[in-house]
Image (cartoon, rainbow, N blue to C red; front, side, top):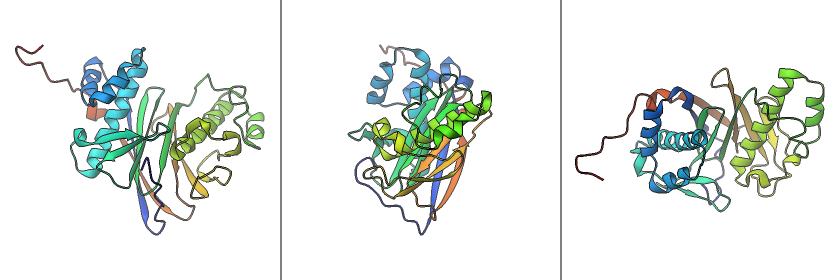
Length: 257
Protein backbone atom coordinates (compact mmCIF):
# COMPACT_ATOMS: atom_id res chain seq x y z
CA UNK A 1 0.00 0.00 0.00
CA UNK A 2 2.95 2.34 -0.25
CA UNK A 3 1.97 3.08 -3.86
CA UNK A 4 -1.67 2.95 -5.03
CA UNK A 5 -4.37 4.16 -2.68
CA UNK A 6 -6.81 1.54 -1.40
CA UNK A 7 -10.29 2.76 -0.54
CA UNK A 8 -11.50 1.25 2.76
CA UNK A 9 -14.47 -1.07 2.59
CA UNK A 10 -16.65 0.57 5.20
CA UNK A 11 -19.28 -2.17 4.96
CA UNK A 12 -17.05 -4.55 6.88
CA UNK A 13 -15.11 -4.51 10.12
CA UNK A 14 -11.47 -3.59 9.62
CA UNK A 15 -9.19 -5.68 11.83
CA UNK A 16 -6.34 -3.59 13.23
CA UNK A 17 -3.43 -5.01 15.20
CA UNK A 18 -1.06 -2.97 17.33
CA UNK A 19 2.10 -4.68 18.55
CA UNK A 20 4.66 -3.29 20.97
CA UNK A 21 7.97 -4.39 22.45
CA UNK A 22 9.79 -2.91 25.43
CA UNK A 23 13.45 -2.75 24.49
CA UNK A 24 14.34 -1.85 28.09
CA UNK A 25 13.21 -5.33 29.14
CA UNK A 26 15.62 -7.06 26.75
CA UNK A 27 19.29 -7.77 27.38
CA UNK A 28 22.30 -7.54 25.07
CA UNK A 29 21.87 -11.10 23.83
CA UNK A 30 18.24 -10.42 22.96
CA UNK A 31 19.26 -7.37 20.95
CA UNK A 32 21.97 -9.34 19.16
CA UNK A 33 19.30 -11.87 18.20
CA UNK A 34 16.95 -9.12 16.96
CA UNK A 35 19.64 -7.79 14.62
CA UNK A 36 19.79 -11.19 12.90
CA UNK A 37 16.08 -10.94 12.06
CA UNK A 38 16.62 -7.96 9.73
CA UNK A 39 17.44 -8.37 6.07
CA UNK A 40 20.73 -6.95 4.72
CA UNK A 41 19.19 -3.60 3.68
CA UNK A 42 17.59 -3.14 7.09
CA UNK A 43 20.84 -4.07 8.80
CA UNK A 44 22.71 -1.52 6.68
CA UNK A 45 20.24 1.23 7.63
CA UNK A 46 20.44 0.15 11.24
CA UNK A 47 24.23 0.54 11.27
CA UNK A 48 23.83 4.20 10.32
CA UNK A 49 22.63 4.95 13.84
CA UNK A 50 25.70 6.14 15.70
CA UNK A 51 24.10 5.81 19.15
CA UNK A 52 23.33 2.33 20.43
CA UNK A 53 19.92 2.97 22.03
CA UNK A 54 18.22 4.43 18.92
CA UNK A 55 19.85 1.63 16.91
CA UNK A 56 18.23 -0.95 19.18
CA UNK A 57 14.83 0.74 18.92
CA UNK A 58 15.03 0.84 15.13
CA UNK A 59 16.02 -2.83 14.89
CA UNK A 60 13.29 -3.87 17.31
CA UNK A 61 10.65 -2.01 15.27
CA UNK A 62 11.54 -3.85 12.06
CA UNK A 63 11.85 -7.21 13.80
CA UNK A 64 8.46 -6.54 15.39
CA UNK A 65 6.96 -5.74 11.98
CA UNK A 66 8.31 -8.98 10.52
CA UNK A 67 6.91 -10.96 13.44
CA UNK A 68 3.47 -9.28 13.37
CA UNK A 69 2.97 -9.37 9.60
CA UNK A 70 4.34 -12.90 9.27
CA UNK A 71 1.94 -14.07 11.97
CA UNK A 72 -0.98 -12.29 10.30
CA UNK A 73 -0.24 -13.78 6.88
CA UNK A 74 0.97 -17.17 8.07
CA UNK A 75 4.42 -16.68 6.52
CA UNK A 76 7.97 -16.96 7.88
CA UNK A 77 9.09 -13.42 8.80
CA UNK A 78 12.16 -13.54 6.57
CA UNK A 79 10.02 -14.24 3.48
CA UNK A 80 8.55 -10.73 3.75
CA UNK A 81 10.04 -7.95 1.67
CA UNK A 82 9.60 -4.31 2.59
CA UNK A 83 10.12 -1.33 0.32
CA UNK A 84 9.78 2.43 0.66
CA UNK A 85 7.47 4.85 -1.12
CA UNK A 86 9.00 8.06 -2.58
CA UNK A 87 8.29 9.91 0.67
CA UNK A 88 10.11 7.23 2.67
CA UNK A 89 7.06 5.44 4.05
CA UNK A 90 7.70 1.67 4.36
CA UNK A 91 5.25 -0.77 2.78
CA UNK A 92 4.93 -4.50 2.23
CA UNK A 93 6.27 -5.22 -1.27
CA UNK A 94 6.06 -9.02 -1.03
CA UNK A 95 3.60 -10.54 -0.80
CA UNK A 96 1.71 -7.70 -2.46
CA UNK A 97 -1.79 -6.98 -1.20
CA UNK A 98 -3.97 -4.61 0.78
CA UNK A 99 -2.16 -5.04 4.10
CA UNK A 100 -0.75 -1.74 5.33
CA UNK A 101 1.59 -1.24 8.27
CA UNK A 102 3.41 1.52 10.09
CA UNK A 103 6.23 1.65 12.62
CA UNK A 104 7.30 3.92 15.43
CA UNK A 105 9.69 3.87 18.35
CA UNK A 106 10.30 6.14 21.28
CA UNK A 107 10.70 6.21 25.02
CA UNK A 108 11.83 2.58 25.17
CA UNK A 109 9.02 1.10 23.05
CA UNK A 110 9.04 -0.18 19.49
CA UNK A 111 5.54 -0.35 17.99
CA UNK A 112 3.91 -1.63 14.80
CA UNK A 113 0.35 -1.21 13.55
CA UNK A 114 -1.20 -3.14 10.67
CA UNK A 115 -4.57 -3.23 8.95
CA UNK A 116 -6.20 -4.57 5.79
CA UNK A 117 -7.63 -2.18 3.25
CA UNK A 118 -6.89 1.18 4.84
CA UNK A 119 -3.89 3.35 5.59
CA UNK A 120 -2.63 3.16 9.15
CA UNK A 121 -0.24 5.38 11.09
CA UNK A 122 1.13 5.14 14.60
CA UNK A 123 3.25 7.19 16.96
CA UNK A 124 4.48 6.61 20.52
CA UNK A 125 5.94 8.89 23.16
CA UNK A 126 6.54 8.70 26.90
CA UNK A 127 3.77 10.55 28.72
CA UNK A 128 6.32 12.76 30.49
CA UNK A 129 8.50 13.70 27.52
CA UNK A 130 10.12 16.93 28.83
CA UNK A 131 11.35 18.17 25.43
CA UNK A 132 7.80 18.77 24.23
CA UNK A 133 6.74 22.31 24.95
CA UNK A 134 4.26 24.88 23.69
CA UNK A 135 7.17 26.77 22.18
CA UNK A 136 8.44 23.70 20.33
CA UNK A 137 5.03 23.11 18.76
CA UNK A 138 4.58 26.77 17.87
CA UNK A 139 3.53 27.00 14.22
CA UNK A 140 2.21 23.41 14.19
CA UNK A 141 -0.99 24.03 16.16
CA UNK A 142 -4.39 24.35 14.53
CA UNK A 143 -6.91 26.97 15.72
CA UNK A 144 -8.24 25.94 19.10
CA UNK A 145 -5.35 23.64 19.99
CA UNK A 146 -3.33 26.42 21.60
CA UNK A 147 -6.35 27.41 23.70
CA UNK A 148 -6.67 23.78 24.79
CA UNK A 149 -3.14 23.95 26.19
CA UNK A 150 -3.20 27.47 27.62
CA UNK A 151 -5.25 26.69 30.71
CA UNK A 152 -3.19 23.65 31.75
CA UNK A 153 -0.07 23.39 33.83
CA UNK A 154 2.37 20.72 34.97
CA UNK A 155 1.61 17.09 34.14
CA UNK A 156 -1.81 17.96 32.67
CA UNK A 157 -0.18 20.21 30.08
CA UNK A 158 2.50 17.61 29.36
CA UNK A 159 -0.13 14.93 28.71
CA UNK A 160 -1.99 17.31 26.39
CA UNK A 161 1.22 18.16 24.51
CA UNK A 162 2.02 14.48 24.04
CA UNK A 163 -1.55 13.83 22.83
CA UNK A 164 -1.28 16.65 20.28
CA UNK A 165 2.12 15.63 18.98
CA UNK A 166 1.44 11.88 18.74
CA UNK A 167 -1.91 12.53 17.08
CA UNK A 168 -0.42 14.77 14.40
CA UNK A 169 2.50 12.39 13.84
CA UNK A 170 0.21 9.37 13.47
CA UNK A 171 -2.00 11.12 10.92
CA UNK A 172 1.00 12.44 8.99
CA UNK A 173 2.61 8.99 8.89
CA UNK A 174 -0.61 7.34 7.75
CA UNK A 175 -1.01 9.92 4.99
CA UNK A 176 2.56 9.33 3.82
CA UNK A 177 3.88 12.89 3.51
CA UNK A 178 5.08 13.03 7.09
CA UNK A 179 5.95 16.37 8.61
CA UNK A 180 5.74 18.10 5.24
CA UNK A 181 1.97 18.21 5.79
CA UNK A 182 0.52 21.56 6.91
CA UNK A 183 0.11 20.43 10.52
CA UNK A 184 -1.31 23.80 11.54
CA UNK A 185 -4.37 22.91 9.41
CA UNK A 186 -4.69 19.46 10.94
CA UNK A 187 -6.74 19.61 14.14
CA UNK A 188 -6.59 16.44 16.23
CA UNK A 189 -8.89 15.57 19.13
CA UNK A 190 -7.52 15.13 22.62
CA UNK A 191 -8.96 11.64 22.85
CA UNK A 192 -10.49 9.29 20.29
CA UNK A 193 -12.35 10.94 17.46
CA UNK A 194 -12.58 12.03 13.83
CA UNK A 195 -9.93 14.12 12.07
CA UNK A 196 -11.08 16.26 9.14
CA UNK A 197 -8.64 15.99 6.24
CA UNK A 198 -10.25 18.34 3.72
CA UNK A 199 -7.35 20.81 4.06
CA UNK A 200 -4.82 18.11 3.09
CA UNK A 201 -4.42 17.45 -0.67
CA UNK A 202 -5.12 13.87 -1.68
CA UNK A 203 -6.09 12.77 1.83
CA UNK A 204 -9.03 10.47 1.08
CA UNK A 205 -11.34 9.74 2.79
CA UNK A 206 -12.16 13.32 3.92
CA UNK A 207 -12.54 12.27 7.56
CA UNK A 208 -10.07 9.93 9.27
CA UNK A 209 -10.04 8.34 12.69
CA UNK A 210 -7.72 8.73 15.66
CA UNK A 211 -7.55 6.29 18.57
CA UNK A 212 -5.56 6.70 21.80
CA UNK A 213 -3.96 3.65 23.42
CA UNK A 214 -1.97 3.11 26.61
CA UNK A 215 0.21 0.02 26.25
CA UNK A 216 1.62 0.61 29.76
CA UNK A 217 1.67 3.29 32.44
CA UNK A 218 4.55 5.20 30.89
CA UNK A 219 3.76 5.43 27.18
CA UNK A 220 1.03 6.92 25.02
CA UNK A 221 0.13 5.67 21.54
CA UNK A 222 -1.81 7.43 18.81
CA UNK A 223 -3.30 5.25 16.08
CA UNK A 224 -4.56 6.87 12.87
CA UNK A 225 -6.83 5.07 10.41
CA UNK A 226 -8.06 6.25 7.01
CA UNK A 227 -11.57 5.17 7.88
CA UNK A 228 -14.79 7.12 7.80
CA UNK A 229 -16.55 7.69 11.17
CA UNK A 230 -19.25 5.11 10.35
CA UNK A 231 -16.74 2.37 9.57
CA UNK A 232 -16.17 -0.35 12.14
CA UNK A 233 -12.68 -1.11 13.44
CA UNK A 234 -11.65 -3.94 15.75
CA UNK A 235 -8.35 -2.98 17.44
CA UNK A 236 -6.28 -5.67 19.18
CA UNK A 237 -3.14 -4.78 21.14
CA UNK A 238 -0.35 -7.33 21.64
CA UNK A 239 2.75 -7.22 23.84
CA UNK A 240 5.54 -8.97 21.93
CA UNK A 241 8.32 -8.39 24.47
CA UNK A 242 8.35 -12.06 25.47
CA UNK A 243 8.72 -13.06 21.81
CA UNK A 244 12.22 -11.60 21.79
CA UNK A 245 13.23 -12.15 25.42
CA UNK A 246 15.70 -14.90 26.17
CA UNK A 247 16.65 -15.40 22.53
CA UNK A 248 20.21 -15.63 21.30
CA UNK A 249 21.70 -15.36 17.83
CA UNK A 250 22.76 -18.69 16.29
CA UNK A 251 26.29 -19.69 17.25
CA UNK A 252 28.91 -19.51 14.51
CA UNK A 253 29.77 -22.91 13.11
CA UNK A 254 33.27 -24.30 13.42
CA UNK A 255 35.63 -22.85 10.85
CA UNK A 256 33.38 -19.92 9.95
CA UNK A 257 34.89 -16.48 9.61
